[in-house]
Length: 147
View 1 (cartoon, rainbow, N blue to C red):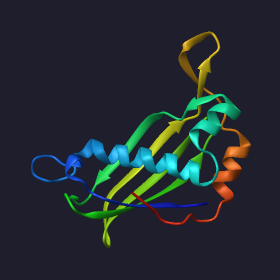
View 2: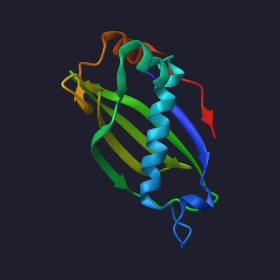
View 3: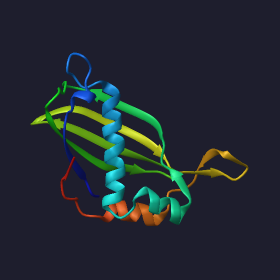
View 4: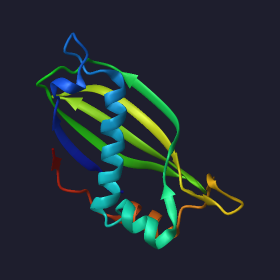
């Protein structure tokens, strides 16, 4: 199963007045890394929407451990991989490293969501297509990504 590795520099806008990353920013990092993982194996969201009529894969559960603070100017490395597939949901594992230290760990459950045919303003879970699972399970580790 591929691991997407993303390196980023902590910017001032990510931080609270003390210069420490404001915790919701980590969730934005992890969302970005999930989208990059899919895109790097040829499954960017625009393609998924066109081919599978999926709206996206919204978060339905989040478990996060904050182990060490990250600050303005730090370079961090985020490793992202699919941890588990179920019928219509899947877990994404994120590990954010600050040098050799694991600073944040997160396990995010997402649902493969389509428009509800009875009410187009609502979403409904649908089984994750086997082609998508296969692409994410069988790809090799991906080259490091920087932003």
